[in-house]
Length: 162
Ligand code: PNS
Image (cartoon, rainbow, N blue to C red):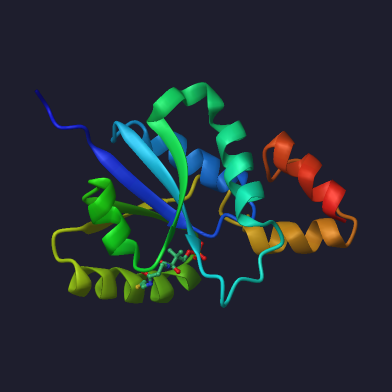
């Protein structure tokens, strides 16, 4: 029987945006199962949404995809979590050149730590290259309309926060 192809899509997802959602949907064309994995870092965490809120939003957004899209969290090294999950591939999105240096460093470090795990980069959808969780939070906090940048459930939660 063919092996299930699993990819980990790690990040902060504070909160998940339409850019993330688009990337997961496109990745499902290549992998059987995507684990959207929120990194827990209690010492550095300055997230707007707590872990449970972020997981819950992701689960609601992908509830129509059954077990093909899962939302989980992990603490510690990403590559160790990937091994535990049985994933050989880490997915990351690339928006602009400015993302590249950070992503390149992470990919090299992860490869050094775990040579059997590859990082695959997906170019962001052309409608989403300017969207980031950070900017979405800034815009909504200043009264701007963010309904085109995040799923409806996330827009509702953001409006409740501010
Ligand atoms: O969405 P983000 O904040 O850019 O995601 C960064 C993330 C979570 C992928 C990165 O911080 C991470 O992998 N954290 C887990 C700890 C780890 O493995 N650190 C070494 C990475 S080279």
